[in-house]
Amino acid sequence: MVQPVLKWAGGKRQLLSEITARFPESHERYHEPFFGGGAVFFDLAPAEGSINDINRRLVNLYRVVQRQPERLVEENRTHEHSDDYYYDARDEFNRLHAIDDKTADERVREASLFIYLNRTCFNGLYRENQDGEFNVPVGNYVNPDWVQAERVRAVSEALQDTAIHNDDFEYVREAASAGDLVYFDPPYQPVSTTADFNDYHAEGFDRDDQRRLRDLAVDLDEAGVRVVLSNSPPVAELYEEYDSFEVEIVQATRAINSDGDNRGEVAEVIITNVPADERRRRELSEFTD
Ligand SMILES: C[S@@+](CC[C@H](N)C(=O)[O-])C[C@H]1O[C@@H](n2cnc3c(N)ncnc32)[C@H](O)[C@@H]1O
Image (cartoon, rainbow, N blue to C red; front, top):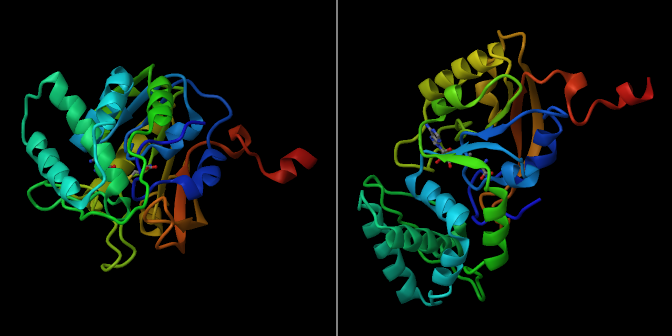
């Protein structure tokens, strides 16, 4: 198990055991098309496979961590702890984002600013305005660690044989083949209009995307790929007519950030085509038979 480098809303730390219990005992490669903070990937530390996220800054960060961990740690040591520095860093982060064709140094700088802002911003949130600018205000921390040398090195190691994509989740249609495992953790469909968890990215994720994802899951199932998906209960009905998918509701303590403010018991749905007798944690009755 490896500790993630980012705090990420919707992070799956509270649900890890419920999710991984439904993974097959053995599989070929592992793919995670909605990577975010990668809590499940880092818990599993799979040997081979692919990760993906539509967020360009996030993918740049993981590519830099994978290829240049020492250069990144060195850059991380240059930051300072003050409100003025935070807002200058945020401006620079947004200027770099607007550059399409970045130099290698600019990519390292952007990755390092991302870690710094993630560790020092309010509640560890990630939020963009309509123009795609990161706009979270500074947080109040006594001694934040944005260098994270050991985590960066461990994450780099864990990513060595993983392909890193910056695409829509459908890339996995090509990337996965029979025997592989795919874990989908898409943005939550809000349970009510006030509970809007879709704020990860300026472009959002709507009901049509949830249907597109369901169609992809069905196609992967037919191709012999193992699929596990977690989301909020309203997506359950999209899978109900498909016999090969089991839909289960579990209770989870969900935190908006890894410091644990804003916790609450929420129902989460886990959908999978992994048969019960092929799972890592089988029902107790199967062991007593
Ligand atoms: C619920 S979060 C994943 C959290 C992750 N499991 C963790 O432990 O931190 C959903 C992620 O999906 C990404 N995303 C949103 N729309 C996407 C799309 N169409 N294709 C791929 N990724 C997308 C967001 O940028 C966000 O990082």
